[in-house]
Image 1 (cartoon, rainbow, N blue to C red):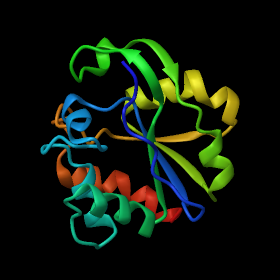
Image 2: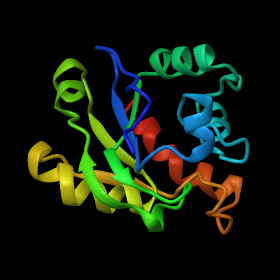
Image 3: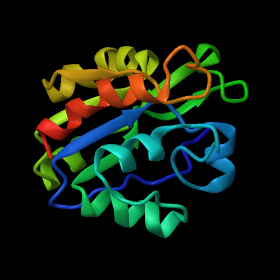
Image 4: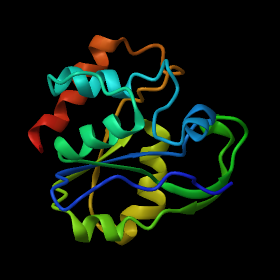
Length: 159
């Protein structure tokens, strides 16, 4: 399956957040973190003291306003539903154009799967260490909203 969502970034992006591959709900919505139970947008809005973006246009504008580039490690793969555990046949995205066009000070990964895929496929090219943040996915139920915010506040040091 091909990744259906283009990256979001501009020349002012200070951080790059990489997920693994869009969920079924995100693919249906045509944008990142489209599952209503995913806490990605709520966490960022809370940390950045901004209102929660709801539409695709608001989400894109929110990211650009706050200097956040967003994409995924995987360009294409075999996947069953939204299960990261089922990912096979990975072809990584080329993130070099984001890193050369923007002022990215730090790469973050959203969850352990994204982090291990980044280290395997992209770190050899980028030579940039990533900071792994706990997944905002509803599948990561062990992490409360408050705990996620406490860890994700690391992004504030770079934007």
